[in-house]
Amino acid sequence: MKNLICIVCPIGCHLNIDVEDNYKVTGNACPRGEKYGKEELLTPKRVVTSTVKIKGALYERIPVKTNSAIPKEKIFQCMELLNKLELISPVKMGDVVIENIFDLGIDIVTTRDM
Image (tube, rainbow, N blue to C red; front, side):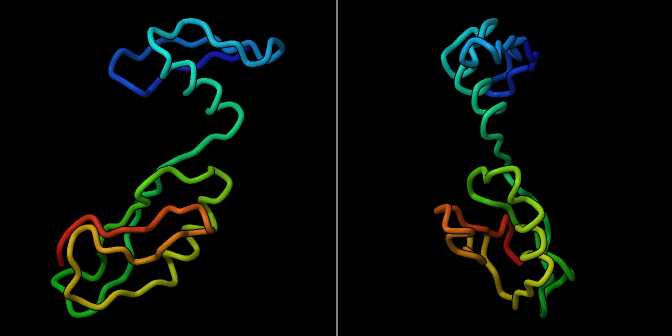
């Protein structure tokens, strides 16, 4: 039995996931909690937020993020790509800086104008 606190909504349900019973989830107040509990144990994903270098701007780094969650095991590879990236100002919030990362259909986008 695994215990998690659901982060899908502000309720914060205490989930119990029975790994020996086909990942049966209890303690959830809605179907989203069941989905979250199973996904977190079977295929955990995270949104990556970071910064990358930028030339010709007020600051030396600009914040970026994935526009959706990526598999947790890909986070370090993603960070390596971001560490090598350097943008040139001007950049608008929402600009795609890396398209379709790891063929997942997920982009890296800027999160501010600079």
